[in-house]
Figure 1 (cartoon, rainbow, N blue to C red):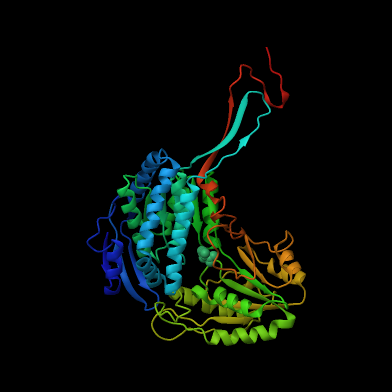
Figure 2: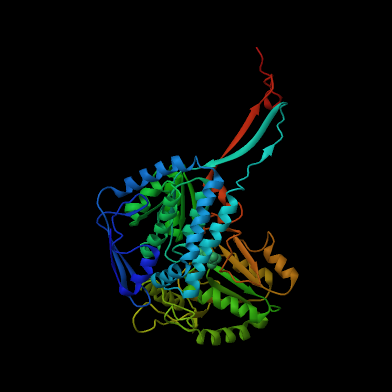
Length: 511
Ligand code: UN1
């Protein structure tokens, strides 16, 4: 591999331990495929930050073989020893937080504070995983048979495949990788081709930490396309788990291919997240949350707020305040601390948004504010507010852009019905100061999403809880809580220390 670097990123990459000297292709822990040339484009300028040329040979096979060998060794390390390696990785990430956050911002266009936040999310995830390394608990059961002991234990699973999207180019890897590492798995990461630099940087940092600990190369990374890497991974029986983040369409293909070989798929797919604002809400809070949810990250989070359900009594006032707020959002250079919204990731994202706006209007939606691209270099658009109605099919789809649909309703029952009527089920929120409304929203007959919040927006989840959603969001759970279980295999063990062989369920079988 060689890198051609824009001057702007030269110093950042040096600090992170990557530069054009540091080439060499397949080094055991990261690689890329023959004949592919990947360019990293700064979406704020449209200019190339770096180009990556790739080495020859059957890199895929080498990486999988290396990862499988690394797993054989890594699984013999104790979980707390594996946790110690992850702890050191967190130390390195803390050291490089500024540089890495800057690189995230440059490569995917999110504002610097969000770029830094993303690295913090990796660090938080690592800290949590270090704790988990001493808490991979199994249960002990009372056996019905005398002098028998029965328990469950959790073993490492194998090399796992991690497919991530451009919008969280490093945090989502960390959700998986930090936990998989303490669980005793090695991994192969297929990052988005739109964010190769951050992936290389993180892999290099991981590689250095592993080397310092004489640990096997568990953090493998493979740059390449859907066909050359993604599809081979999903069909590969050597990878018992594929964790994939991206569109519902991609997830369906991954899920089917993995199911076909009886593998496990952990899917984190599209969202179509709504905020319900009741007449009794604290409107100041709601306004800030809606703005962050819909405009933050230029609407390119899976948790972005895409639908706003307003109770009739506050609808007009809230919409007016929101339009005013939209008008004062600073759009531009993501590295300027005053900027709230950076660019979309690329031209096709801009085209998709514009196509959605045409469809919205043809289905009867009214653009209240925004709706245009911004002239000049980079892939900038205006955040857009739409007056919609539940009969518009486009509102049931996820457009990965800052488009917010507003709806009005009279009763909470009606709001919940509209809320749950979309095929996706990731994140949801209600703003209310009425305890009964809040509890109704969180009840079994309330929001059908994997995440349900009260007086907090749909995006910006902490890592401590399990993250993921229902329906077409794919059903996977990552990050905190007991999400670690999917990275391990469960074994139920029953041990007879007596001199008889009693059978369960009272069955007699004597000759
Ligand atoms: C994503 O967009 O894929 O809850 C992940 C959030 C972030 C993660 C988003 N912590 O918005």
